[in-house]
Image 1 (cartoon, rainbow, N blue to C red):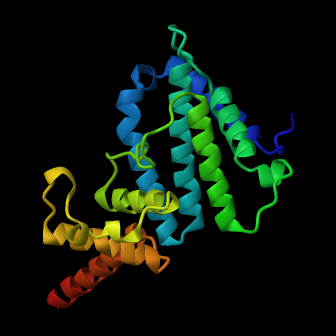
Image 2: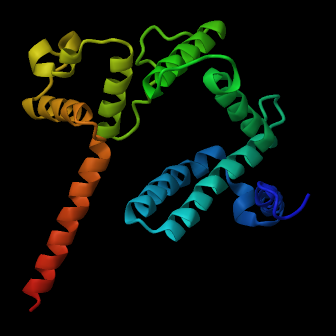
Length: 228
């Protein structure tokens, strides 16, 4: 294999990770659980680099995210209880999923545009779960509730919309809370604001992050002016 072949550096990364796992005291003691905070942090740092508009910084941060994937796969490969898997298993799994969920590319399905691609993806995903005997009762069952609230609200609304849920259910004050759960006026307004952002074709998380960065810059400018 030549060094300029696409993916050659990935093989080198796997080899380096194997060496570190054996030879570095810190790397050798890590577990899935101990690495979990790093996985989250590296994703946020990659997002920061993306927002900065610095391609070199984004490249570096994506490398850190990739390291977390390789590290977790290396730890999993050591399992002796039959639950282990390798980085190749991870890669083969996503390759199979992408091929399976893109029949308009890898099979003879015809689509009219991106929206139909999304609908097909959701239908194929639901069929996969049903075949595995794990079909969710609700379209929202697989949404991770541990994510930040703004991301959670947006993902819940996206999933509900694709499932055909009436849009007015996104207004807790109009529909009333479920099972006696109290929703404050502020909470309801925030949730409804997420719906407004999505209707405008905007990502509420990214919009709020942009507003937060603008506020940071205004504060810094004020601080400089106060210092004379």
